[in-house]
Amino acid sequence: MAMCVEDRISNFPDHIRCHILSFLPIKEAVRTSIISTKWRYLFASISTVVFDTYLLCGLTHRNVDSFKNFVDRLLKFPGQLSLDCFRLRADEIASWNDGDHDFDVSGWICGAVCRALLFTCHSLLTLTLTAKDSKIIEVPSEVCLRNLKTLCITNSVLVGDSLNRLISNCHVLEDLAFDEYSNYVVVINAPNLVYFRYDSVRVEGYSLSNMKSLEKSEICIWFDSSNYETSATHLFQGICNVRSLWLNIHEVIPLTIRIPIFHNLIEFEFYGRENFLVEFLHCTPNLKTLTVKFQVVAETQRKVLHMEVPSCLSLHLKEIKILNFKRDRRMFEMISYFWDNAMVLEKLMIRIKSLSETQQSIVFNQLLQLPKSSKKCQVVIF
Image (tube, rainbow, N blue to C red; front, top):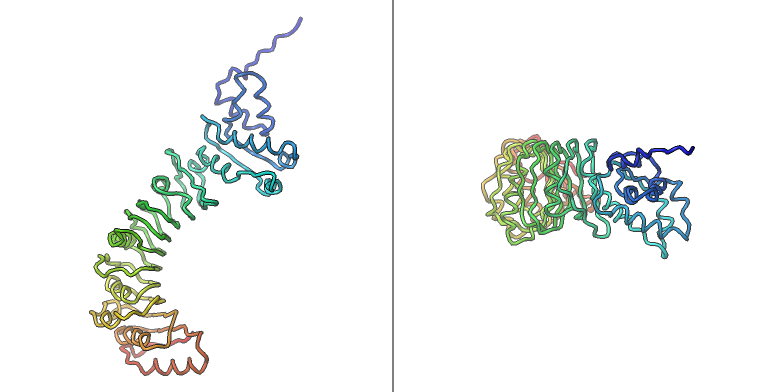
């Protein structure tokens, strides 16, 4: 008498059978599609996708295109579940990516990302996203990176709502760095943020709020938009709690911009025009260390230097470092301004490597002849 074997596994709910398939090698999981109509497309929703070395080494010129098409369909199949694991040996793929075969590895990664693998990882601490070949990642509506502390975004891999959605759902974020080229408003609400780096050519505006923990910021910006004065004001207001600031400004910013008071700022490194620097120093009452590299020593300098002296020069500034000394009258006037008004200055460091030893000696003697308010200040040539 023939025995009747009951197929209990086929009667399990889809999510349980998907979980079972996740323990199988991908090739074996695909083979289950021939069992019955219930199994036909089930493999496309497995939560673990691993293309191991054994599978990839087994590719031949006859089946490599079939493999490529299979992966394309697998990662872009509609109605899929979230991925828990996606692993692909890029070096093995590279050996087949020649003139006859074109593997869309970036597309595969984007497909895996869109299945929420990346944006719901609770154990993720550091995330770096870089766009290649103008690929843009769309962040899904469900985002939960509750332990992410470091986030770096480059080459406009995220824009607009995707960028804002991701940042707003990283609730313990401490380090944030991104380079952006877009017409979007940058929205950041990060109460635990300690470090913030932003490099942008063009942006419509900023909404930076709840950044009271911010200690260090690096900003490189071109205010190239119709409302750049408002954008600049909002940007400075958002980072005004920093203790250390590196600022590179590539445009002439009108002095009408409302700069907030940077009460906590004690270290400031500035690349830009001297007229903005002097204005900015009025908003840094407790500054102790200043590093400067002037883009242009402009004709407006004399007017700027006759403004009211910033209080930080008189009371707190102890070290000034000038990185791009030029042996001309305007540079000496700028140094004289600092030296004459920095009453507690202890060290003036000037980089003049481009000059010969004889020229350096002459410059050093010229500097010593300038009037100074601080009698204990040292001059260091480097």
